Image (cartoon, rainbow, N blue to C red; front, side, top):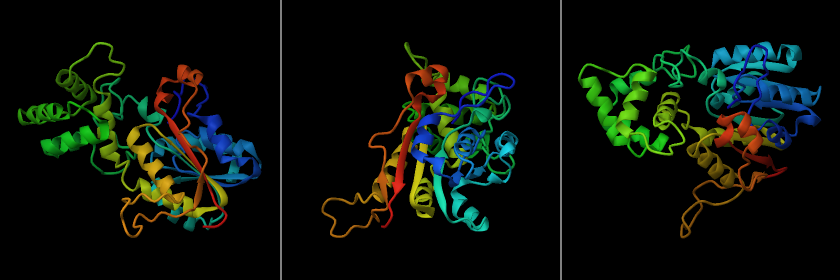
Length: 321
């Protein structure tokens, strides 16, 4: 989601910032919803673009939201923070009595505040409890809870579907064997070492063997893909005519859902060719502005390697459907 925080006083620069502002076009003012406000980098750029812009910033992570509140305090009432899940966007806007939304931004994935935390379990760079919850205030299951309770087949499915891990069955088997022997996986280091032994290191391997497993568990813990297609449709519905929707994703599963939903909302029927009646709900509500996903320039990747997998898709809501 974001570039590293850096040293004391170093500004946070989010991924694909210039491209995001280009497609959102906030310079004419209006209300924008940053559905994953994180450390506030995108919201700051939106608010700086015009004195007539306002931003509702939503985030499930209270720690990140507090950081954004402090960063954006100079904008006063033009920034409204909301501690919630972005899927609640419709009810949030109803409560705020806001209906004329000029733009919606969703920046999916893990923020630098989460990824760089030595205690929250998102990264195997630190030995920490295997938590991975984006909302640490809830009583929901942690990654350690899932590995302790789920059957072997379900762990393998999560690793394969969400992490595209080819050794998913072997890793799941080792996880279950370890807990049956009285050694349940409770820390990031324990999981990373187990995956590295089970998957094996390969020559010329660009990423750590445990990267895909950590991604898969994080997605499962936070249910990141659940209802993402419905969220996209809701976000489009609340936009005013000519409003903009921008989504930044960091892995193929998210990007695929967003791509398919935008195509459906642009009027492209995704039913089988011989289906007598369209049942996918295709409707011409938007114009897609990105025929292919926009990716970071090499200069940005050099400065922030985490940006390498980012993909941006954007659309404009049509005047009439």
